[in-house]
Length: 298
Image 1: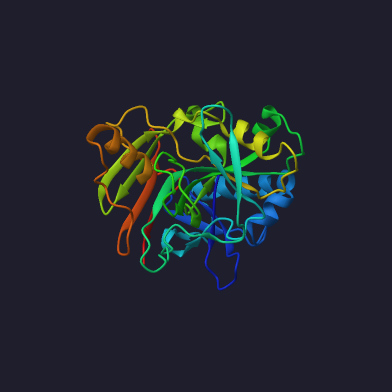
Image 2: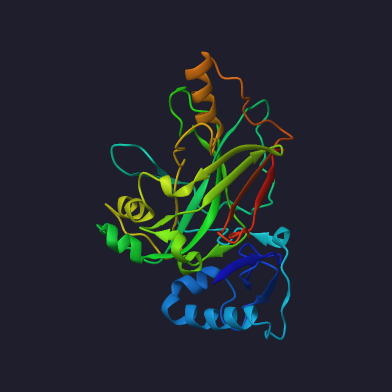
């Protein structure tokens, strides 16, 4: 099923169920008012949300309305834990980021005065409760939802560090999706679909998301190595490696590093005020899976 949080003047928004083709939605108020509420009692509430989802897809939901991604907050605007993964070669790494400030897919990113910014587009998994010392298999079983993520940061001080510097903001795509919605594209807790990334309307990358060195099961286990995770933790994939420069890149640091290796210096500029980043992922049917992120630096 597909879930989103509609703006209603509150900090957490109102939980809505969204149709598979992202054209219609229905408030889930009679089941759960917020996504966090559903995650806290997932085994009981998810089945009810699934029933509503099937009714909506069948065209029989009485109070359905056209879905508008511009009305969405992040599915979890105040996640208890926001953990950003790193796709390094040696072992999975996860870094805790400030929680409670995940932006919506159309929210502008405020650029500090005179600063240039990097970004990293990827995916994120939303978990249920995960015990400390969890195995990879336990991490896999804890995945409740998947979403697009765009993490904006200062450029790293070290030019060879492609994961970026200090975080400025992170945003989630408009719709969070249960893994079963991906069908055969969900294997080994990796998404076998293409992540599309563009800056100012120009393609930056078409990245094969299955090329994650470390799966979400690995990353969640790494995050829970010393401590438990609460239901509603958000674990990001980090920068997904690109198989080749032809397919492009999911962030500016990796593109600039490739340019430096080839030409001796980068020529792609960092993000500045007025720039727009778009992130999307299409299924095998050519339709958007999670909706699209489109954020302006201002």
